[in-house]
Length: 497
Image (tube, rainbow, N blue to C red):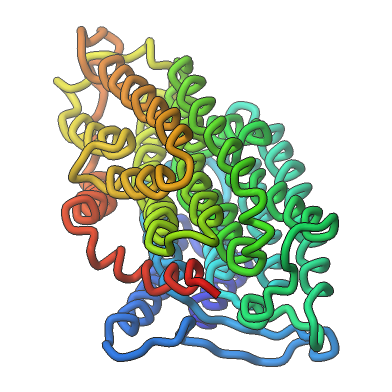
């Protein structure tokens, strides 16, 4: 089923490219139908984790030889961490593809590239071979490059080029680190993630292990992104269509944090433990930098983009805390890691929704300037209500998914670095200020004459956002199923060896 979830969107994308007679409506309908299939398949796989009895670390596994001489094969399988992120990603792709958007050119190609990006994105989360991981990780750059460059606005070509160059540099560092990690292990050469997790090929801290870890952290930090390698993100978001921004923030950024969990945290425990504090400090800087810079933005999309730097900093802080406690309390490590994964899921749903809303603003006014709005609550009550829910979830209000994630991250971090947890809480305060300021400037105050005819969200837009934010509320009120699912994957990662 996992193989179908990856390959079906890729095959459908190729078909859309090759059938020139399809119009915009037919292409959109096909893309929605195809995108729904991986979501259903992943839901079926996720249900297997709740079947009772002992569970293997990875389920739904399959393997076919590809390059046997190098130990490379088509390997797929998921644990609780991977399936949670993959499910969120598949749902967000369905929402982004179904989101109403006016395409000035080549709608068939737009939906083909969205399906291509769906297939390769799921590949990153579902494969168990490091070379396949790299292949899909790299191919995601291609899909996003064309979606920004061809269907964006403003300086879209420059933003797409900057995105591609930055992230390609990171992926090359990851490739070198993958080769170094695989060559460091005893036994036959293998790129099987399960084998490398069991071998722990790099023990302790020496120049080789440090350099390999730096390659992973550098590459994944660009993708996440963390300060100071985040500068590609704001222009990419500002110039991309709303649904593409939702995928960029909700799915592609998770490849960086998921990569940190799946590879160095799982395969290089001792080395990660030695460098956990510098990683936590880098995450703390990202938390504060993202919040303060977002507060200064008057452009709606740039403000939301910088909050991603802030929120992904929380995620990396949780990962660092989980790694730092390698010789301490496994329960505290699991709390930190669970919080990081919940943050990935929550951020995808919340910030994906915020970027879809930003896209709705652009569709109506071609303007992101916060100073050009105000008083929209009177003419757009549905947009107002849903934006308020998304903003409150992003700032970590209790009973919403963001609170569940941040509470666990700070609880796990406090067990090792109380001072980092205390300083990091300042980021929560600044995030609250920037979102409350955004809501005031958009929806309250006097309505200007040029906004008198501002159109509220339509039925399709309202339905899509209601599903995404309904899940945010459900996770916030009753997080137990998600935490149980994630825990099945996080427990082996933090277990004492």
